[in-house]
Image (cartoon, rainbow, N blue to C red; front, side):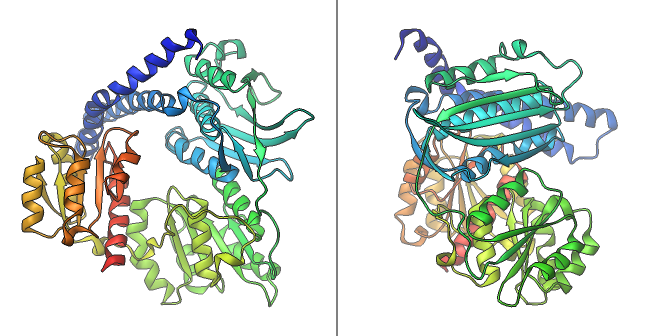
Length: 509
């Protein structure tokens, strides 16, 4: 490695080591403000709490950026990986989903025609750069409208995957390109791309204000993608369109579906009637954001539609609230499916196959099923009531946070502050799940999990890691933990882990 680069890399590594210690008190601030915000506060006190929460979230974002940029790839920037373009962009969507909602921004996505899906290239670096420039555009440039275009250039000497981000509706005092290039976040992106032989271009664009663009060397991989299947199923996407809709459309068309569109839920059946022949199957896929304000019309369509309906990007709390009602409205026809936010294309495809009675072998795309297909429709608040959960956590504040959140769902928590206390508890009782902190006063969560998993009665009991670090997911899984919950413990994160816990427990019963 160039000697000039070592100090910067060492600084990032040093900050990564401090990440856990810095992040823990920030997590506590966020959790306690979330609990405080639910109390009966005066307008002034509520404003103070909200301001504290915003500031803590900003600090947490900075910490996450540091740990993201100090991953193992920092020392090996040229490591190529096989990846799907749609998978990569779904990961980008998940990374920026929070800022998009917080800033009330919208992002659209377009692809050049006939762009390949599968590549070998620096997947991690591409994702890092895209995440950084999107976050910078929303936070520093105050943009409310982003448009990302993806293209593929095949030249005589090299093949390149190119990305262009158009940043619209910036603040009135948005910086000029030369000022943007001096920003520390953008300087880091420049360095990452320089190590790959590329460059981040920043320029003014007509009617766009600011335009970011970069290309990286990537070789296409020959894998099945985009061939129609016969008879061709028809999917009707419902909603205003945007990042989620573009990703779902690309995923389904790549797997052999015909993709139609409807602006509103009430138009979907008419579109499907027009597009679907007797030999074809049809399904409506609905972006939750487009129907959440229309519960009455939504109920009517669940009851009356002749086509299966799939709702995606559903917030966890909303899914719990409406799950039982949907079962009632569906009247046992099994024609409605849910995919909880953040929705991944593989989960959506799995649910589409279930609703249409199809098999994965019928599709014309390559699918690596990294995750179990989700069937979250049966999860209701009543289904979680009475679960007995062991919370292994030595920090008293974190104990209180987890216990308070669990009690909201009528869960019965038992707390153990040490590894010894946890072993005594599991020998006396059978728990439905275990929340496991990594750092304990007398042991660590990895070794404790290995001991518990050796007990016959606990081989199928899910263990959920509780940690402030985002780097040790692999170590948690190798120790036998089933799920990973990073701090701060928001209601949504906790609910997702419990939904997965309940599914795993039922699957083993």
